Image (cartoon, rainbow, N blue to C red):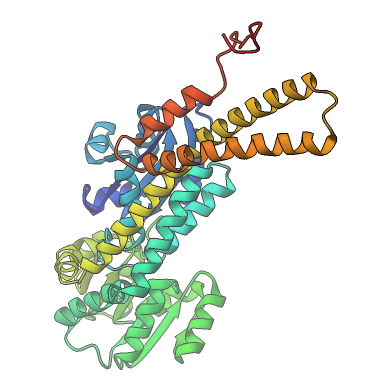
Length: 433
């Protein structure tokens, strides 16, 4: 089996393609079920966020996994499979592990330092575990990746990417509409980005900030914390008419603000201007509204250059050092774990020989007192343990070295189960032939 990572992200595909092929939770579940049915796939986790869709698998058939993954993306977005394949990046073994560590630490995000991704990594792992596609390999990998992400957050100055995204978007809005103070704002969505947007707008001194969310309780809680307004989801059209600045950040699969909804809002206030900020992917706001008179649309596609420039200014050296250290620890532990079955086989083989020879001796000397019989057995076992101690230590050490798998394989050949149909026979002197 081989650890495999296949995926597409903002590094290899345009945001428009990522939007079209974004997998919803039901899509992910269907893909996991499809992979679980394949005998070539032992374990699988799908990480689907707004800026990436990646599959991590323990498999003996990379081609099968790749075909399932491409088919899932093509079915979702209606994209050409050939084009999708060209946008995929395939990583194996240590490279796949290091990539997940980098992702979980926010170092591979559209805006470097995004710690929200760690929660998404954990959610992807939990979903796969609930559907029975996580085993010891991916369990160890994802737990270590989450640990690396936590260390980066707590031990470095890297962070605040989500609030940084909101700040960049609001700066862009101010360039289009002038100072934001005195404007009325509407925030659609009360998740991480929606909450941060509401906080930023409240602190910016706007005349009014209103939050709306499909789940009323979440919006009411946020509004109570900040002392801002909230309205029911059914009142979204009226709230849109009232606002001059709108920030939308939901997890909806389809547009929340359609062209018809925006046209109707503009008609209620002829001559007005609305700045619409879309922080979601897939997009919350129909991109065609950008052509409407009185609309200024800001979305992640239009912010991409600003986000890349901001990422280049983030201090990441220490974060990369932590990720590299955690990746090395993971590889060391993985190699040591791989040697364990061989070591167990060696110990069982040695003790089996001890038991066999002690039994033979005791049968030859049936009059030996019980106390001495126990001493003979214990002495033989101590000798065996001392003889295999050094090989055990060395095998664990060698397993972590380059080419260490060769040592482990030799140990398996020497002490593992014998092939079916073979047996050891004893000659007249009690030896093996």
